[in-house]
Amino acid sequence: MKIALIGYGKMGRMIEQIARDQGHAIAVIVDPFAGNTADGIPVSKTIAEANFDSADAAIEFTVPATACENITALAQRKIPVVVGTTGWHDKLDEVRKVVEAEDSALLWSSNFSIGVNLFYRIAWHAAELFNKFNEYDIGGFEAHHNKKLDSPSGTAKTLAEGALSRIDRKKKIVWDTLNRKPSEDELHFPSLRIGSVPGTHSLFFDSQADTIEITHTARNREGFASGAVLAAQWLTAKKRRGVFTIDDMLKEYV
Image (cartoon, rainbow, N blue to C red; front, side, top):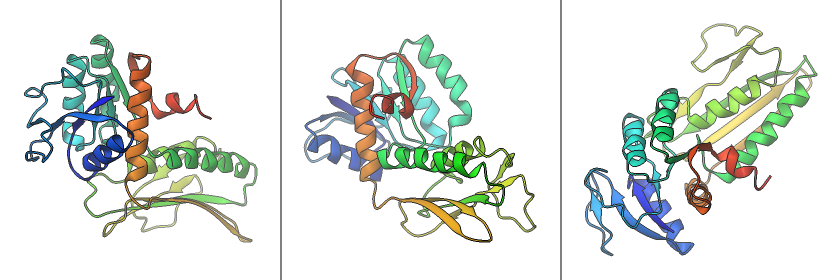
């Protein structure tokens, strides 16, 4: 598989490494701040300037402000794209219309780590169990590096919203710092931005008797990169068309 990298920051470089280790090639890099590569991979400042003739799929890890524009441009070129950028999902309906109108393909996720996506399922099953025991309160917490642009993280949103839908006594999520007593129907899920933390997400079930904590801690970005490459393989294997999430891919595994 030949991959176009849209964004060549830390995640883009990790994806390049993982892809090459798995026998894939990088067709082109698109990043306004990227310089020339040592091995001669074509580098373009914009998608409009890039040559995608040899690319089977694109993997996009940029910033929220440019994600929708990038997805649209790739859809118009009929390039299947895996998008790991978060912070743009409120515009998903608009993006879906473009991708479907262009008969292209998009696979997006708030987190491409296979470990995280299995963690979701474990945490949500726990929420279903604790739904039956009103003495347990539920809340969560997430921490990321201080360069992350969005808060809460997309992973935190997915985790907390999935738990909320399974706990009848909780009706809404509070993401901000609380300077008051929380209401019984509020699920509190604050964020911390500090240092170089790749990502930590926890869900807590607490009673007067005990606390159960379910946590996923990323050691590095390798898990995100591996999942994104796997998603690109899945998206192109059967020349899929339309909009998908990592859940569609995982149905073939779990």
